[in-house]
Length: 125
Image (cartoon, rainbow, N blue to C red; front, side, top):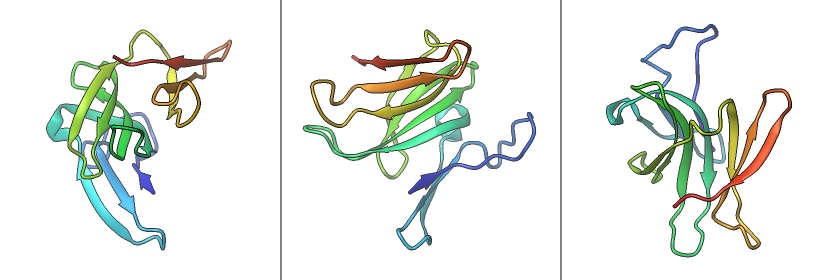
């Protein structure tokens, strides 16, 4: 399991807002890393992505970068980013998940929480 934590309220806390924590099945901490050193200021969401075809296991983050742009960031399990895509074309994006089977395996399912709500598929280059 992977998690990120935030203090209640609206202000960014650089001490915790860019940290991710990986936990073992019994709940003990396995590893932690920080995306701040790669130019990110806040983790909005994180998902585990299993190995698919030619890709290894990875973590998928929704994160805000130093310019304020929201990005999808793919890292290895140690937190080293390998790919980063801006997703400002989908304003209000609140959740993402990797599609793991079928014709669209490897694409992302995305959700927006605005009114009306939006659900779509994103194919990255």
